[in-house]
Structures are given as C-alpha cells and as structure tokens.
Image (cartoon, rainbow, N blue to C red; front, side, top):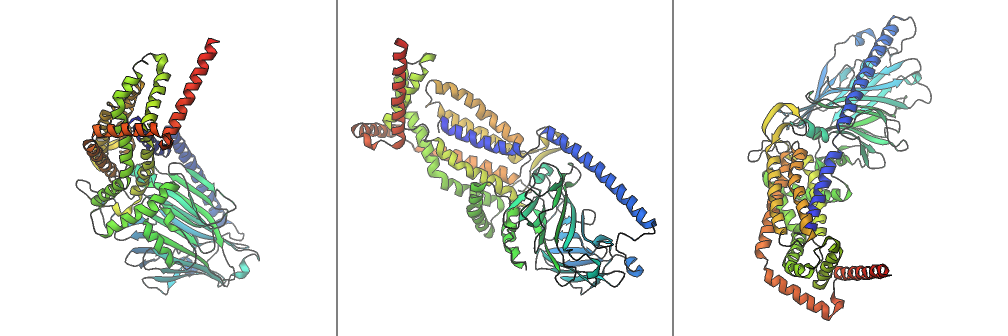
Length: 628
C-alpha cells in the first residue's frame, strides 16, 4: 500500500463519517426540534381545548347536531374487544370505533426479553374514518358497533344510526401479517351531496421503542410512503415535521407506513390516497420509551350508495425483505406494492450490491442454520475473496514503489532545496514512466471497494435476522453490546461503552500502524513529510470511529473488526510472499522492453510520460522568459 491507498482508506472513512454526521442532528437542530415540540404541544393543547369547547356548545345548543346520532341502546352499549389471530399475529379490535387498537407480533421477543412484540395498543394508536354528510359529520371513533360473523380470522362490525342507516366494517385476517378491510354504508345515500366521493382518514401512532438502543433504532425509524406509479419517499429520521404536505402534489400515493427499525404498520389503499395528504413525524425524547409520534391525514375513494366498498389493507409485521416481497401476493388489489422498499438498502450502486449479492448470500447462509456471528464472518471472508485481485493490485503497486525507492533517492538527491521540489517531482514521474509504474494504480482498486463497505453499513442494521441473536459475548447482534452503562448521557459518547466498537477501533488503530510501517520503505523526499501528517490522520481516525459507532449495532462493528482482521492477514501474507529482488528484476526488464519498444508502454505510463514532457517544455519556456 502507498500514500494513494491510504488516501483511498481516508476517503472511505470520511464518506462513512460524513454520512453518519449528516444523518445526526446538530445541537442547534436538537434545540430547534425541542422548540418545535413545545410549540406543537401548545398548539395541540389549544386545539383540544377548542374541540372540548365546541363539543360542549354542541351538546347544549338547540340546533341540529354536528355529529351523527345513534339510537340510545347502541350509543350506550359497552365496548367489547374482539381478537383476530393466526400463528403470526394477534389483533384486538374494539366495538367502540370499530378499528384495531392493539397489535401483537408473535415469535419475536421484545427488548426486555418477554415473549412477543406489542407493536401498539389503545394508548399509542388512533384510527378514524370521517364522512362529511349534508347536515352531520360521521366520525367512526364516535360510533358503537355490533359484531357478527365472528371467527379467528373474520368479523363484521355494524353501527346502526338513527333513521336505520348502517356503517359496516368487514375484516379478514390473512395467513400471517396481512389484514383486509372494507367499509360501506347502507341506507345512507340521501345523507350525502350528489358529488361526494371522498372518505377522510386520520391515523395517529406513537412508535414504541422496541430495541435497546434509542439513538440507533430512531435512526432507522421513519414515516414512509409509496407513490402509486412506483418509488418511495420518507421523512428525514432526525428531523421534526408537523402537518407536512406531500412533496409531490401531482402524484398520488397508495400506501403509508409508520416504520421503526424492525417492525412496521402499513396502510394500503385499493385506489389511492390522493395527492393532498398531510403528515406529521415528531421525535420523542430519549427515555420516554417511544421513538416518534406519527400522524397521517389523507383521503381515499368512497361510494355513498354502498355498492362499491372502500377497501384498505394493513400490514403489521417485521421489516423482512423477503417477507415483504412475498406478502403482497395476499393482496387483492393487483398492484406492485414494492413493500420491500420499506428497507433502505443504500444509494443506487450500493443498493444493487445489497439487492443482488448480499441478500442472496445472506439468505443462503442463514438457511443452513449457521449461527449469525459465523454468517457475518463467512460473508466477510467471501467479500475478501472477491476483492482480493484488487487488493493484490494495490499492494503490488505499493511494492513496486518500495523496491524503486533507492533508485528514486539517487535520481532526486540533487533536488533537496524547497525551490527544487517541482524538478524532484518531475524526476520521480519520469522514473515511474520508465519502469511502467503508476503511483495512482494503488488508489483506484481501494476506491472500488468503498461501495462494499457502504453496502454492509446499510445492510447489517436492517437485517432483522440478527435481532436477538447471540454470539460469543454478544447478547444481541442487532444492537450495541455494552461492557459498562451509566444513567446519564455524555456528549459524543452516550450512556455506555460498546465492546465490539472498542475492538473495531483498536483493530483499526493496529491496522493503520501496520500499513504505516510499510510506507516507510517507499516514501521519497516530500512524500515522507506528507506521510507524517497522514500518520496523525490515520491515528485519529479510530477515535473518530469510536464516537460514530459506539451507538451502532454489535453486528456492524463485529463485521468491520473481522474485515480489518482479514485485511491485515492478507497484507501480511502478500508481504511475506513478495520477493523484492525478483520484483525489481521484473521492473528492470519492463524498463528495457519499453525503451526498445515504446508502443508497449501502458496507457498510464504514456500519460505520465506525456505529462513529464509537457512539464519539461513548460519549465524550459519559463526559463527562456526569465532570461529575456
């Protein structure tokens, strides 16, 4: 490895660090978020007071009521809970409001190790359907429903209103995480205006903290929506949005997801949700046991005659790429829902690596029943095998520069003065071109590996298969592995020390030290001075990584630690198997061959020679101008 290789590593590190800091809010942003939260809380409190005042006024006024009235028997009926369940899911519906008010996902332990994960309950989630009739407003949350056609997977809920009209909800639970819902009215067509055809939906949810690490889980939790014509969009995970309109008012959306790191609640429309949706996503404070407060206000089609029901589907389940791909087969809407896009796999080139390589290899290895820690090791080893030709090319470029160092020293020893540095560089470039050596050839292969680093950076935190999986001392590969924790938050560090993060940083420090030792034999003149500055950067980088990765999952830190271990082993093996004398003899033979036949000069060597020639001509021109 040479200076350019190190620059490649530094660029990789800077990209990773920059990405992390870009997605991490500044102190000013956090202060602004808290201010927004306070303002939002005040506005919410004022809105509640206004609503209460309006309700009291409506209750005491002798005018036409603004909400739909049920007959007294049904209006005073006691709320009943109805449970739909299968092997994967248990949904609790209330006859008051007629919507799902609790979701329990089976076969997954919660963050406290208890059986099953409660995605939300009646305290966290509210869903209401609103219809604006000519003289009354119909809000499903105000209605009491009677249940019929009950089974483990189906139920019909009917609300009878004064005048004999009916509001009917039909629910059908699929074989795993999919729920089908339809809404229609009976005998109420005359209550609506002739052109009325939109149903309003208000959906609120406080997203529970399901994992140990608040900061890390919050970074992968966001309100996401899918455009009807394809593609998804989502809110920045670290910012607050209050009553935010859709970004593209000309493109309708067909599903909305309240997502946390490993589980999601998704609402899907048979037609679409229109183009006038408004969304809210507010970060909750650490320690509140919640990540974010979500709200979606949107509309979908409605047929007042009751002939064509309004149909929705819900997905309550894990963010598993393959599962999300397959579950849409249960949909009756005939759409390409692209639910798997709930899982962010990175930028386009990074997404391709994860989509068509990492996921397939990961699926193959996990299907063998191998422990997840071993899976990470095997994936790392496979990636090292694939990138070995590039690593070897980078190393050989460094080795060529190392064996040429004595000749470079001899060729440039007369250029020791600061004003002679240009001549020294020209002499070095000339010698490189003579031997067919490119000082840049070691940098490019390392940069090519950068997408792989970033691909794993995006893949591992989204792999739900790592959740709850132990390996060696690690209790859960999907979150940090603390060796010590404390109650208060320390700036840049947090409230714990992660052992795998410490090992990764120590490994990074050792690997940097090893590579810098190899550089001593190949640096010439000013390069050696530049290397001293580079050494400080390489030594400070592990410290920067510690502040960046202490909150990250043990699985990701373990991958980087193992990757560094294999990299060090490869570099050591290449150094031991490289014969400097034979390599120098090959370079001398290459020099003689190119001297005898310049056409065999490589493209890079030709460019170096041309640059050298241009530099010499420019220097001569300057000298002539100076003499004149």
